[in-house]
Length: 171
Image (cartoon, rainbow, N blue to C red):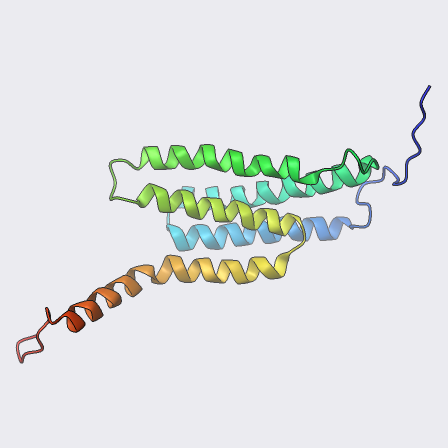
C-alpha cells in the first residue's frame, strides 16, 4: 500500500489556542452587532448581522484549521470553503433585495451590501486579521451613519453653486 507521512500532527488548534478562537468568535459577534445596530435598530436585523459575522468567522476558522491539520500541501486550499460564504451571502442578499421591492429604491440593495461586508469582516476575523476589521468597521459605520447628511450637504452646495438657491432675508 501507499503510506503517506504526515508532516503536521492531527491535533486541534495547531499553533492556535482555544482562547484565540473564542476571542475571534466573540469579536465577530461584537462587530456584527455593531454593524447591525448602525444599519437598522430592529432586533432581527441586529441579530442577523451578528450571526452572519460569527458564522463567517467560524467557517473561516474551520477552513483554515481543517486544511492545516490535513497535512497534505497539494490538497490544501483553505479558500475553497471560505469562498462559499460569499456564495451564501449572494443568495441571502438576493432575497433581501427581492423582499424590499415595496420599500424605497435601493433599501434592499444597501442592506444586502452591508450584510456582505459583515460576512467579509467575519472572514477577516476568522483569519486573524483583526486590525483590518476594526478599521473597516469604522469606515462602514461612517458610510452608514453619515451618507444621508453628506448627500444633503452636496445637494445644498450644488444649489448654491448653480445659482438655484438665493440667499434672501426670507430664507
